[in-house]
Length: 398
Image 1 (spheres, rainbow, N blue to C red):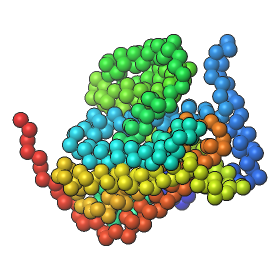
Image 2: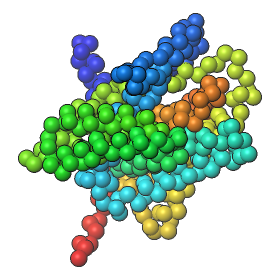
Image 3: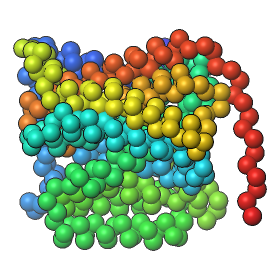
Image 4: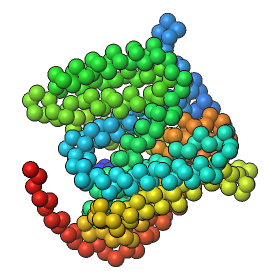
């Protein structure tokens, strides 16, 4: 009975989002209880992997954020490659509307954060925090609503969130790189070129890619570039098809996704969502960092996603998803304001001071909670979706 119930739960589309929510609530409870000292002490505990004095020595929180999250970005990279090669991102015409909406949903929140933190060099570095969208949470809430929304809306949100992740990866690479150590960066090219060779040979075993990817992760970490990018590059090297026509990419994505969604991301949430509420004042809640993040997620995402979509549809550049109306689009714009995982991750790259990180957590959790509730209420109270209309076939190209 229990096994069957757990199987049904993990098969549900909302399972990942529910586990994230449970992990975040658990972090809040622990951070504001008598276990707070043990929680902080455990996350601050140093672990080292060294050989002859050379290696990696980091506190547990950074092993989670730099190590486990590299696996998360590995999964994101697999998903991106699959969608570009054979999925929703293969046809450029299908990407225009959600792609431009994703750009608007990143630019406007960042501008709002900058406007609120302008002139404050200690805080403005977190401008990218409200630009992110959490795929698991957003899709989880959409799944809870069920068939009251057209199926095309899920594709629109999924494409928007995937492109949002792509934008976040570029932002991390360009703006959140520490001082470069070129010698380690050159060394990272060795396993990358080896994986490229294996890719061209279209071999099926995944082990060599994972081993070389781990070596590249070490060199990228030492180079000053954020190590999670090694996860994305490794994913891009996995062949879509091997020489026998099988798909190593599909196999590894299918294998790694449950561990990422149900283990790694909840662990990250538990380690990073522990907002300390003791002694919290309204001045702290409305400080520039939490205010900029919350306003970016709630207001910026709605303006960016809904505004760009409205302009493109009204000018005839694109059409609404099949069966969708403007209420649906507004609900999706609200759900895009759930930043959680990626926002907390970028927040950790932006600030090392724990007081500022507590403000980041307040802004991310508050903004994501309000955005999620708004999106759920708007979409759950919308009239039941009509059967998706069939889009007319495009004329064949010469």
